Length: 252
Image 1 (cartoon, one colour):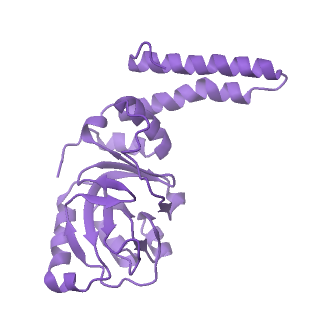
Image 2 (image 1 turned 45 degrees about the vertical axis):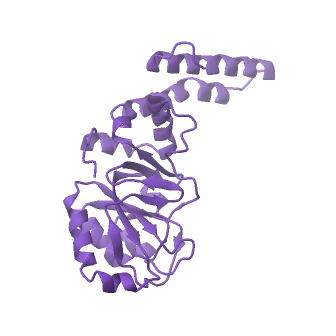
């Protein structure tokens, strides 16, 4: 696992103040990867606690197979070993769970008990391509979840392997990756992409708010031609600001 942490805890708290698309806009400028779809989920996921806002944390990874009871028999100490792994990683942490039963959902790893246990171990939430249950109780525990669906039972939700690469919603996540997630989906951020991310996201949001958005909203009393002229001017100003900020003459 990569334990390099380019960002301070204060940086993470500030990243959490922005939605994931805004962080993506900054990430896009830092990495110059457009469209950058190799960094966010390609399949639809659902945020079951949108009222909790975004979550930010470092990935701890887990593979489960609730439909297969043999894993519990093969490693009866799996729970203890897995929990010690989670506890060994500095927080904040997001548990990224690949469900081998996908696309069939047999049981849920997550519920009231497991969310409280993982909260005690420094985890702020989960992204799972399987299911969750005890939705109200998980919310009460302050444990956010992006998942495929809700489920009634838990089946044989035993840890199969952990601290390994996993694939969820069409995206590979590695242990230690930084994740920003909300109701729009999630973004996976490599260590080398993190140091300038907060500044870039702030800048892109401010650039929109001082150029194209006010030009689009302040239209009272203007003709359609005047509105188009204002939008053209604002778009050019927006692009010039980006080029100056990120030192990219001749682009756009």
